[in-house]
Length: 118
Ligand code: AMP
Image (cartoon, rainbow, N blue to C red):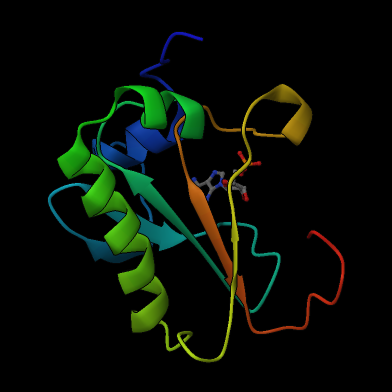
């Protein structure tokens, strides 16, 4: 799928719509999910234009990948979640329910998830 530069997270990255930023570095940006599914619900996105995890894996540079994965851990640490535990979720494509076609990691925490996926 071609990247749609009018998707909501592309607009957030360009500063065209507001977001509650929690972290930013050269490769990544993180903000609070607007409809939280848990007491902590953060989204971490790469600054590059990638539709989903598969697109990122296939096309991002090694530097972008390292930067993005480290940023996810940093955001979790900054939220006080390392050692406590959190759920990391990527939706990929239509059947997963991915609504925004810009790669995003969901960091979910602050409640017990038991054996359910979400
Ligand atoms: P997904 O279903 O994996 O594509 O998740 C998209 C997520 O983006 C959902 O959890 C939405 O609540 C969240 N979302 C959509 N628009 C915004 C926005 N403007 N600011 C923050 N989160 C958003």
